[in-house]
Length: 362
Image (cartoon, rainbow, N blue to C red):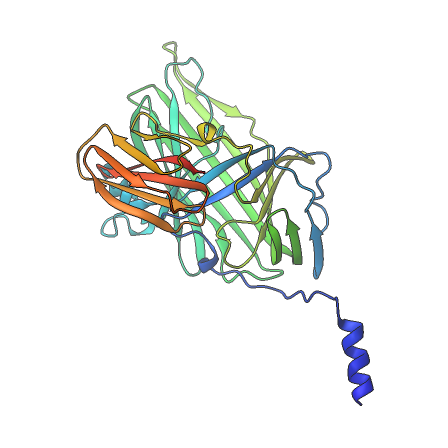
């Protein structure tokens, strides 16, 4: 009997145990979380076809061409106008969100004629125990903040999420750009999702038990605009997106996302750590709101703001842990000599708005 047990142990030694995980809303981001994302351009070599039960997905050869920081801002830090639409449990409870996040470049169309610009678009996300939803967007139309509640809400994920689960979601969005410009954008969207695989995935970030979600997103977009000669509706050609996302426990975002259009990969992103080539300058935003110097810093760093109204400065590491928090009225000098070397995110909250910059400690 002892020999049999020993033989069994020798035969099974070296095998990695793979278990089927269950994803819940606790595995998604929380307000004020930040994560590092790497972007790869290996479009022609990536495999997005292999799936099914008990898979081993090896994407360890992915190489980052660029990086960015994704921030998930608490809806309580949004402007008063946005909060009336997306943080109002009295008259708009179905739109009451947990956080908002920037939309990807090109997510909204350019308006013909150049008379109007759509800038700084953000998603508002509601993360309930049974589902995660895009409940609307915020966008600046010629610099004026405009909240847009979804007429029909897009359900992104349904929980708990396990192999062979499936859900469909139809949503509708209507953006009226008057009075800035006589134009209207409409989007009808169909999202068809299925958890089509489970197993173990390896990326440059690590190895995890995971489930894979395939979401086919079909858009019907149209725009009405009037350049002064009478208006008309025009259909827009928007390619169908097929999103493949690998979800694991406790990682907040998919450890890997691949987007396919017309049979070819068009986007490859994965959760990652800071890579040295990604410069602080490329990642910094909102430098006109406040300044952080010297950057990179060795011993001390100064945060200087242009406003003195109810400002709070926070510094968090790339895992989202708050390293420093204090009120600020003009300039704050901070000792970083004992901090771990690496990338940090400086968050300034003032007048119900949040601005961010990155800080490198060397």
